[in-house]
Image (tube, rainbow, N blue to C red; front, side):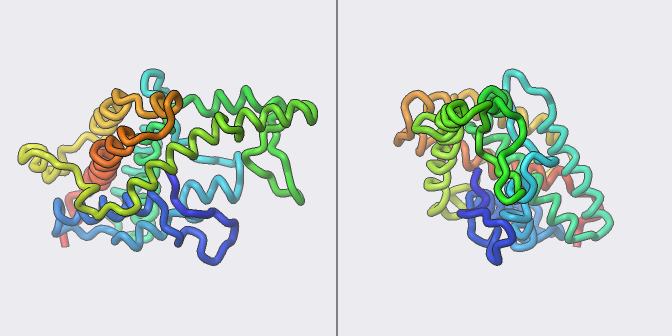
Length: 276
């Protein structure tokens, strides 16, 4: 999902141009406050500080291929890497909150939210790494003035490079489709107020969230993942393009579910000593 309109390396305003991640983080933080009003937790501003160029997307821009957090998950062939990453953020966030390290807590809250959001985004339920490996005959990144450039599919020769990049960036290309889906969701999310992004839950469901010490983040994540995967939104988009039905599902199901899971991620990370 988008975290900024543009990711310019070393840009003065890098990360300050709001994207979908920031929009969802704000909605989750507002809902978090209603569920746990007496908890001392990083503010929206503190969390969003670690998005954009200071977030996972920025890391991909600054050092392509070097320790990049890959937030892709194939629901029916899950290798466990993404949930392990999310649980690591949970552990670190709990420790930071317990020790009063507000900067580290803000960082972990932001990066956890980013991983959860990407993990529940249908465009990330695709074997991206395998597809890229098939398109890159030459495994090393192309460089410009010594800087590695991500997104150029190198081949063994000029003709093969042109072919590989057309399959990646062309009209029906791998990355073109990925970006187009996320752009559609971004357009839906942008004008919505926080209340429209907040899930409608029953009294019993709300009660279970308020008992945050009993929340099982791993179980809740996979429950949300199945709910979204069952819709097959990305498969339908790849076959038929963006339409009103997908926009409505994004508004009423996908986005509220992401906000719910982000909030659950933060709530489940709270130590008992976080009361003001």
